[in-house]
Structure formats: C-alpha cells, structure tokens
Image (spheres, rainbow, N blue to C red):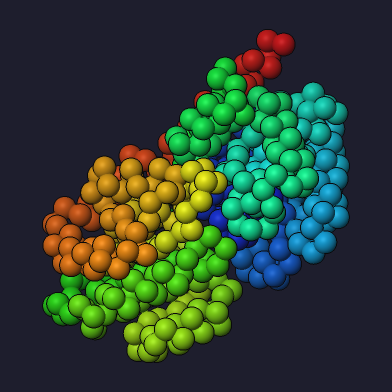
Length: 404
C-alpha cells in the first residue's frame, strides 16, 4: 500500500479541518496508508473531548495522526520553526514508512513538501486553496510591489513550478494561473471545490416546518465575521429585511467572536429578540442550517477572491437551503444563478437590495427550491467525488513516479 504524507497547516480540530481535511482522508485511507501532519492551536488541544473523538475516528480509519503546535506570534520566526519541524517529521516518517507522495494543503505545507522533495526526491501535490500572497495585499497586510510581496511571489511561483500536480478551488483561478504563466499547461491541474459530506449534511426534515407568519423570514449566518467576511453588510441587509418582514430573525452560529457580534448588532439597533447567537460543533451544523429559510453572507470582493470557494456554500446547499451573497467570489455566482439556488446582490446598492427583498417571498415559495439546492450540492460539492478526484491524481503521480 502506497504511503501519502498529508500536511495541513490548518488544524484538524478546527471546523475547517473537520470538513475539508478529515472527510477526504477517511475516504482516501481505504486505498492508501495516510500519515497526517496537522498544526493545532492550543485552545483546540484543550478541548479533550474533541481531541478524543478525532483520534478515534482517525484510528478506526488506520490514519496515523501527528499533531504539532501552531504558533502565531512572531510570524516569520514561528512559521520558520513550524516549517523546520514539518521537514523533520517528514524525514522521520519517510524512514519509517517510505513516503511515496506528499499532499501539501496550502503554502506553508507546500514549502515543507518542496524541501522534502529536494532532500528525499519525493513528488508533491500542491493543494493551493487560494492565492495567499495576493490575499495579503488585498487584505491590506502587505503593500503591492513591496519587497516582501516580490519575495513571496517568487516563492509562490517556485512552489507551483516544482509541484508534480496542482489543485485549485475554482475554474476561474485555474484559467488565470495558466493565462498568467504561473502554471504550465502541461501540469496536472484539477479543480476540486470545498466539498461536503452529504451523509452528514442533509435537510433535517422536522426543522423545515413552514411558519404561517408571513411577516417572518429566518436568515442564517454561519461562520467567521472578520477578515474577508463582511458581517456589517449582513446586518444592513437584515435591517432592510425587517422593514418588509418585521418578525424576521437573524440566526448566527459563530466561533470566538461573540462579543464583537453583539457589539455590532447593538450599534446597528438590532434587539436581542431579533437574533440568536450560538457556537456549535461541526456535527451539530446540519440541524442549525436546516432551521433557517435562507443563508446570507457577503465577502469582500478583491482580485485574490477569484480563487475562493466558501466552505459553507456546499454545506448550506446540502441542507436544502438557498443563499444570498455577492458577486466576484470564485465560481459562486455561476453555481447559484445557473441552477437558481440563490441570489446575487450588490449590497451597497440600496435599491437593488430592496428589489431582492421584494423577490424573496416568491423565491422561497418555490416548491422545488429545497430539492434543487440538494441536487446542486450532490452534483458539485460531494466529498466522495472530491476524494475520487484526489485518488485519480494520486494514481497518475504514483504511476509517473514508478516509471522514473
């Protein structure tokens, strides 16, 4: 059995790790020996029940889990330390198992994979997840054309060029990578969006009882309220929704930003009775999502966002719930509008926002809407299909390596 050394700089214990790392690996472990290296935050490691559950699920799948501490402070020094630890763990794993392929999830992981390739001649798959360097500029962290930006761009180009295969989240960024010359056309390059476990995420029927109150729409906001997500825009949308549907409720499920959320809602005149705010585990999310009428989220549009596909999108659609969001985010607009499972809105255009709100009653009364959302999730966001695509890439790379 071939050994895959999977490196994730995102923690397996975080919601993103649970949905976008573990779900794939549980399926891939049926055909490969998987050694997973993840970087975990101290606060997540202190949740002993979550750690125990993760250990048990991985053990049952015969996945070896090596976890290191994620260091945030003194980013350059700490990231360098994390990289050196990752290379050491990879070298030690190779001595024990003989690594056949490194699967590197994101840039830091790819840096470790590149060093292992130079040291041990092991091929690697660069699972990009986004345009990280451009995100630093678009997010105002780095200045465009600064020395730091230029150095990082050169490293990015090197990581792409030396990779044996590439995975992107969107068709738009794949096209750009080829057109810009960043990725050669001959490179094995697959588009695999942020997929969802359709067995775990599905409509919870008893939560979908229709309310007779025509003045109420329950909208859901799930996840982060900072960085790229514009929670203030969701609040603005909700305030306008209340003008037409005064009994409406904003249901928020968030991790770690409750004080910030409460302050933003208070400052915008949203009363306690008009919203709920909770923190839920990954396995509790299907019920939470299924309890709303529609999900609303807005993301700051920027060049780097052509590479983004929000994880929540597939999970929401899988639960039979439509979405309202903005344009300029990867392939999201095409997914929602081509299948009529969501609405695209420029929330800064008040007239457009009011027109969308006027359309909501008709849109939500479509008897096929919830089934259509589920079908789109099955066609585009199935984790089984995603794992099969990874398996096909592994087979191609291992076949090529076997001939060398």
